[in-house]
Image (tube, rainbow, N blue to C red; front, side, top):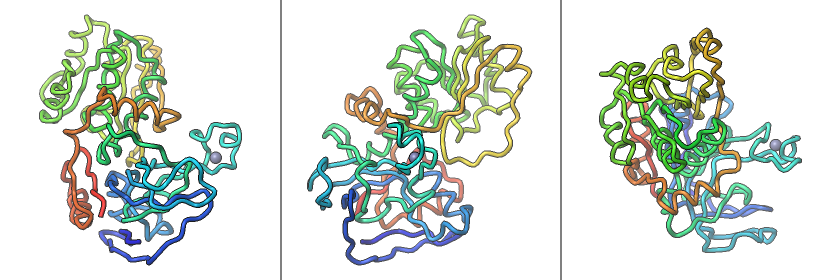
Length: 339
Ligand SMILES: [Zn+2]
């Protein structure tokens, strides 16, 4: 097994672990694609707890089953699968009451434990999902984003006709806007990068606001007839609108969610007075809950399109692209093709 290992600040090496054996309830998968994302960048910047190094990056991916332990009945050799990003503990209250997605000790690949950026990976069956032909290996990397987007729509109770402001045309923001369209809400995408807004318009999102050039509050007011946005999602990897301004675009009795995971957040200043006066409800959202299967279906049916978000890179180019990420180059999503 050949694995990439981040050993410290700006240090990464390819290590050959030799042959590896499957263990109980696990499957050996030939990795066909893996994500290279924000948590990998943070690891490469040396910002993880020193105890975690060395760590294999790669939060999620797709692969083909090459070997199964005899205890495994739900997958067989040749199945194409999605490798999800989280492992539950199977021991806490939530796990024992059938709510593994709410596990109190969820661990994330590439962040808490070794990720999937390797030629082969040994993974527990409960983290794997069958992939239909209509979802490519590369597209599968977005399943988690789609599942978080569905969770956001459910948590904020976004309904038909809601003006739904989405701050940040990141992969998550652009996916969230498409899921909102699917639910017949009216997404309003806000970003300070015109190319990202152009991408939103190409995806059928007709209200976009460039926060670098326009007065966001005025635009939101005018396109909602003065009511403002009844729902808001702030994608946490965004810098499109400062936190202290964000509640100004939310309506009375609106709901606002701060959505995303594995981003470094400093202390956030929110206008609590505005929140109280307008009776706004706030949510923090960073889980997929039980929406992985629905997310796979939305990608398969092309209700969510991700083809334009992808920068595909070869397995050998991982160090080069981690350096680019560290230097602040802007990619919507890097996807590493399997070795
Ligand atoms: Zn648990």
